[in-house]
Image (cartoon, rainbow, N blue to C red; front, side, top):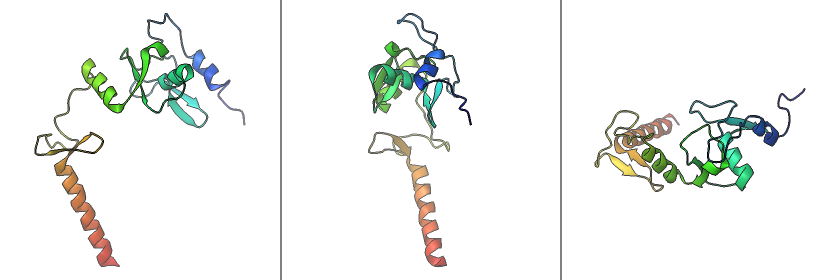
Length: 147
């Protein structure tokens, strides 16, 4: 069966990049995901085009690849920098794209008494965590009594 992808991932990448000046964004001209980031198939894996661009120009990184320009479809390597999740969240907040959440997914408020910070710096809702723990204990008890 013939592959529908013609050329190497690098060749296919460049066909989707309308290059402009290095100080301008190079907006991905291919498929984009729901958040506006370009995507490219590399073997069996779908990768984000900006990450592919960064690694093509600078080599692999274990870190996230962030946009200096705050433009998700941009693949200009001059606009891309590696960073941590915390760096990325700080960028989003500074750009006004990520307002602070005041409630968890189930609507409980993130107050001082109802919020804990995990070992990796992420916060979680104590009410939801207590509910999950209680449900888990109940499931284990049902399994023990059924045995």
